[in-house]
Image 1: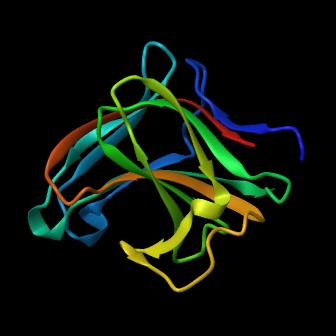
Image 2: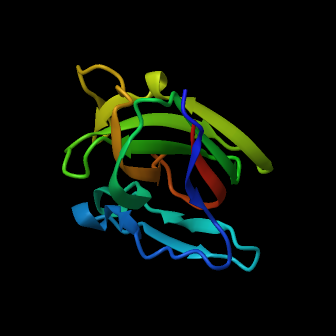
Length: 164
């Protein structure tokens, strides 16, 4: 096993220009998501999910140069949610049409969440694909999505994303 590496460590000095919000507006929806650094130096993904116009999700995506993750087994996140369920997503290549996903239940407190690569399932637009789970070879995108099939406000704070 290789030494874990930090995919992103949020601070007041963080450059978040590669973190892009993608809402359901790409499909006509009206959800609104925002991503910023708060006064404590945490990443803050917040907004509201609307079901109007066939909407229902908001996401934030971080694209980066391809990283080999063959020597690693999991993603570890330090985050603080609002008691809602979020989807953690990775892509082997940004151009892939599908993501590998896992769900995280937040509890309103700071928590450390571990997601084994082997538990990340291939998914496209909410449907599980008949493909193997995340092989843990390469990674070019990390994303967080909220889409719980209901209208809701959301607020998720991020401290660190580590590949172990």
